[in-house]
Length: 353
Image (tube, rainbow, N blue to C red; front, top):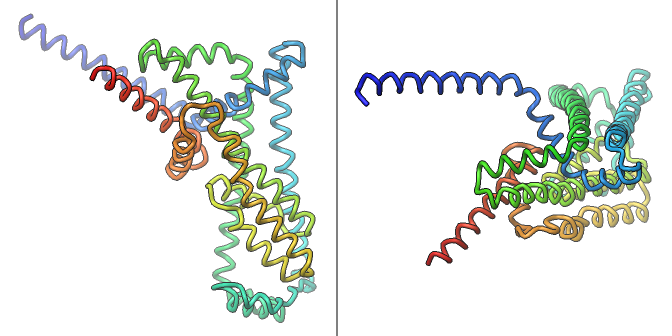
């Protein structure tokens, strides 16, 4: 091959690569707004598929009917608690606003026990007492702080609404995926076969599937259980804005932080307004709820997998710190795949030696 042919082939290859890169970039930008809903749709579909098979069997193996029923049920399970929590927040906000405008809003004076709270007791007691004596003066005194809190709450509510709409789209996508599960699974195996050896393609696809289900049950499932139990306790104790506290409990539980971090403030409020006996019972109940992940997580996380539970847990926590809630799954999958590839490399090294 002479230099002229080499130059021509190089230019042609560069043009082709450039066009492929342009096409790939263009496709990525078009699909980018849908990446997160699609990834969540895949995660939900994989996590829910065993239950979908049972539903399909109960409906006479009618695939499309089962997918439709699943989608409607999943949307109902998402929307119903959202409406309940929203109503709790709206009702509490409306009541506070109405009483404030009419001048009848009264803050009950704090109990002397508030002063005994560690670190923040004395300052909290002073501000609370001032607000109970003259709420309007207290709000004017802390006007800048109040505006910051309100701004944070409003932006948080807007973000939550966007997240709910995103999950609605993800559930619809998951319904489409479970209806075409066989084809989607075959494509996944083909992808892993292209990335690895033909023999290990299916095993890595199965590992990804098992990791998603493990994290869904062991992290999200436990967090939802703790949030629901916390909500029931707060509803019984008539805690104001229990919906907001429930969301906070679920967020910290997903972040692998003990829910007592949130429930502790709720318990402090209950102690300040309720009788000692029910307040103590509620405190014990909150401690049990907060520590329940200690025996729930080993039951669900890593079940049926050869990958150690610690690897899955570290991947979930590290992934969430990097990429938010969706990183729970992506981080666990990536670390599990990396662990299995590393162990396979070690095993081959031992055979060679």
